[in-house]
Image 1: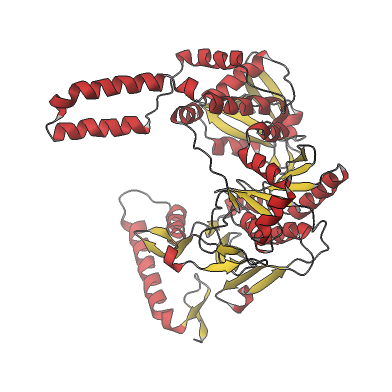
Image 2: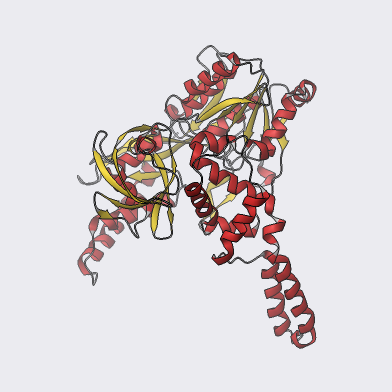
Amino acid sequence: MKKYIVILLVSSLGLFAFKADDYFEISKNLDIFASVYKEVNTSYVDQVKPGQLIRAAIDGMLKSLDPYTNFYSEAQAEDYRYEVTGTYAGIGSTIRVVDDFVVIESPYDDYPAHKAGLIPGDRIMAIDGEDMKGKSSKEVTEYLKGNAGTSFMMTIFRQGEGELEKKITREQIKIKNVPYFGIVNDNVGYIKLTGFTPNAGNEVKDAVIELKSKGATSFVLDLRNNGGGLLHEAINIVNVFVKRGETIVTTKGKFKEDNKSYKTLNSSIDTETPLVVLINENSASASEIVSGGLQDIDRAVLIGRNSFGKGLVQTTKPLTYNTQMKITTAKYYIPSGRLIQRLDYGNKVDGQASEVADSAKHVFKTKNGREVIDGEGIQPDILVEIDKYSKVAQSLLRNNLIFKFATDFRSKNETVVEATEFDVSEELYQNFIDFLQDKEYEYTTSTETVLSKLVAQSKDDKYYDLLKDELDKLESELNATKGADLTNNKDEIKELIEYEIIKRYYFEKGKVEVSFDDDIDLDKAISVLNSSSEYNKILTN
């Protein structure tokens, strides 16, 4: 093992621990960097800002590693705290840009935005008299955040009511890791987990206990679109369903202190009740520890699509001047021994990380001997294919037209039925089509793209004059078919309209419940849970 030495380069750079063999290379390049910086600062034609130059250099350096190694300035401390803890001081609502203004997207229950009576679609016109027109979400967020207990005046425009003044007092906001849980299909307990900030394990535990008291005889843990968070909370969540003393994660890094094993430390709540975990391509990091751990121990059936594939562990390092960084220090391995990291950041090609080659992947075994593979995230036990949104639906979403229609609907309807009962009728869908009559939502289908290339190629090949009539006919038929897209994709667009309308009345709870009747992953989970023979067969084969 090579010896490590500590070297003092210059007082402004501080102490660095280097391999002896690397010292000259590091010293040389730091000297080159200092020379470049000095020359730019001295000779560049325009005035430069030293802080911005150095920040760009830091970001560029870290970008060459992986997307999870990041530097946080003193001014970004609040952003980092929210990332780690899910806590910030503000109004408690998501926002989005629609046209020239930021609007309220979804207030959190019982937080300032909700208490002030803000609803999705409210346009933020001014804050303490300052015009918000043209400002980005990030800029408006800076006005909304502040010290808990401080107040400000918000001027909003609400369709059907005009401009309204709202006095809002900021509070400490703690986003729930479990925004919803409940009984579906009579006996299935459903738990939606959206984060892994402090107390996530207790929130899942409490949900399981309450659902059991309400008669749940099986569980669905929904980790779809959950990008992860704290590793120890992932262990705590697995521990809800797995006995004490099980090794869930092993980490391996450059230094001895990075090599650790993480076991379940507490008494479980339920190790027997059938459990399904839902995952998709956006389930990452801690979500993959939970889903992969439960799969490797054969405690749960996984349903959905392959997860993201992040098998890297980050550690927070405090730096000088109240700055800090989050740096990848280890890789983690789940109970079967597999590393689920999909991209190899250590061997980039043209600046891009490549996926682990099939030839480099290995087969591992779960506790019951089922085969699982490393290098490609977590593979579900039951793959459920879903269609991508149609081009017309993508365009409607991109142009905020479904959002605007829902805002218009809310201005004319004070109440609607419960989320689980709400449905977009044919009459309401026709109203939506009428609403679109004077709206722009241009889009290009894949077929149109291919046809355009065919026309261009036919001209290059001098065949266009011969094929013109056929190409014109094809274009005409394609336009007619495209004109029927709102009809052909009605069911899909109806689901999107339902979602937008319901969240204006029932917020977070409504957003979850309104999806139940169209959720094919959940339907499959319920089907498996209601068949003990199928459930047991999956876990033993």
